[in-house]
Amino acid sequence: MLVTGAAGMLGSQLVLDVPAGTEAVGTDLAAGAHVRVPGADLTDAAAVAALWREHGPFAGVIHAAAWTAVDAAEEREPDALRVNADATRVVARACAQHGARLVAVGTDFVFDGRARTPYGVDDEPRPLSAYGRTKLAGERAALEEHPGGTAIVRTQWLYGPRGAHFPRTIVKAARERGALRVVDDQTGSPTTTLELAPALWDVLASEATGIFHGACEGACTWYGFTAAILAECGLGAVELEPCETADFPRPAPRPAYSVLDSSRLAALRGRPLAPWRDALRGYLALEPL
Image (cartoon, rainbow, N blue to C red):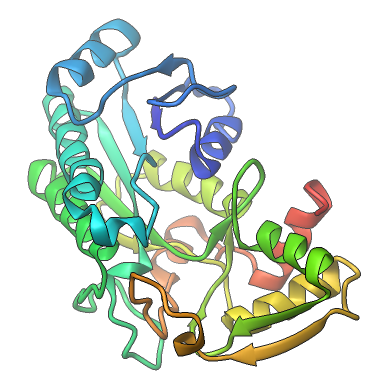
């Protein structure tokens, strides 16, 4: 098996969570402890062919490599498109040529946030941002190149060990400032890599194709997530004030509501991902902040 983006927060967890009896190779442009094949440019078909020839064959690929700098994508959309769409197309084409299964990681940013009930896998994507547009282009490229062997798993509000993410940032800010203002008008489902990575392996092992949503159960705002983080970290005395998205303007628009209906994935696995608050406790037990 091949895991792309193996130096990243999700990719590194995927390498650590390889199922028993399965062999996997991690690749990334960046070096890292979980990267066996550094420097593979996935936008280059020749480089991907060499990856297959020298380190394969691969029965399946989990494609976690991505441009994830949401705000930077607004000014550098062609670069984000190259990473999120062109590379996905090259990987999907290679999988089709070699008869390999592909699981590509997607995002809630493909939706516009106007819904008030969880987005289903058949709901029409309407991305607001360059990041969302480029990730949607990657989904479509993968399904076009390898429709009989591709599964897309969209996730959201991701955090986990070995990464730069919201809980780590918020705890650092709380300790430094003693008071915080956090957005209370964006709603989603915080999801740990500890929950998502095993689910992605389960999807790869199945024969399922098409679109899945993979997020922890339940929903909250960023303000609610912050309150839970502070409580779990013994920082409940920190002054916490809710605010609106407009109070902290960012280059990329965010969907106001992007909760994902993950029932199709739960049916495939026989269980859902953990409730987000339980998942937060599990993460903090492994990596106290």
